[in-house]
Image (tube, rainbow, N blue to C red):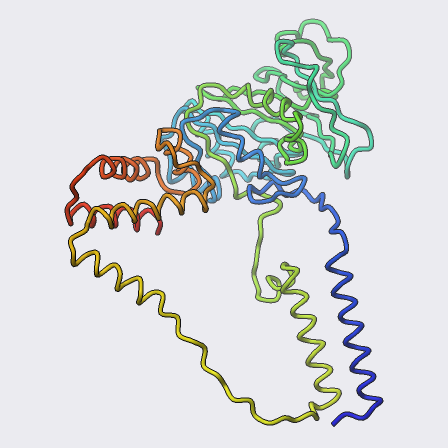
Length: 418
């Protein structure tokens, strides 16, 4: 048994740990303004909302989430046309192999859209395109504009929080079209064809051009184009809310005739890399606190040597869960009575309930829009989704069902959910 002094120490340690836990629980969690841009992140500078709204902004036939390195993915897919490959990150550093593959992709009549503060040495050496960014967040508000006056300028947002100002300081005016800017002065003579409207240029000794405050350009490549944009914050969660998404919509309006969107999820600053068990534990707040409490408990146990003893507590076996066996028994009864229609109806009902709860989709109308949304959210192909929903509609309309119908719909649903 512990003496009175030891008991007091244990009680004080327990009270201290309890107060620490309560303080941590009720303390407001600080907002994380770290650039992330992953499609899972709902932080201010995450990319969750932009990815969810892509379907409405560009209205493509399909959106493909590319998790591979762009070089690896384009090695596997070398025939795509009328597609747009989208990269959004604070820094997009492409090597020579990646750059060459993206140029080949654009040559076939596709679009490559890159929004970042810089684009790496390979882009600079190959295309004579380079961007300069300030160190850290800018202190002055940024008001992006477009040279094309047909685009709405009045409702564009002011970027003044957690924004890093970046502009192009090297471009090739022979092949480049200026699209957007921050602040520009009076245009120089003889270079108006370079812009969608007006701008100011400074010629250098290499024959290229440096332009103050330019942040959006277009470079034709073969039958396609490259679009370079230096304000990726425009596609973050914070600047895609409360009507601020108009600027992002105007930026993407220069992507035309696209049937497929390839959305890069590989080049992301917020991408998680877990290379050890301890790194994973410390990346999760609940596990971190559990680890600290475990270490604290072990230390206290060692200090007081676990002197307290008690009689052995009888182990009570928990009640066995027989739900699965019960379900199998009921299923066998239905099957033995050849009530295939009832089983098919229940199978379909359970599947549609899963769709509502897991993907938050309305299942009242199984139309083409529903099929597209289900395919995107479930990660299945459009053909597999179309086949499953068509079969469900067919069985719902039938009055007599066979064992083959039951086996077929069961196989389709199990395969779709696996």
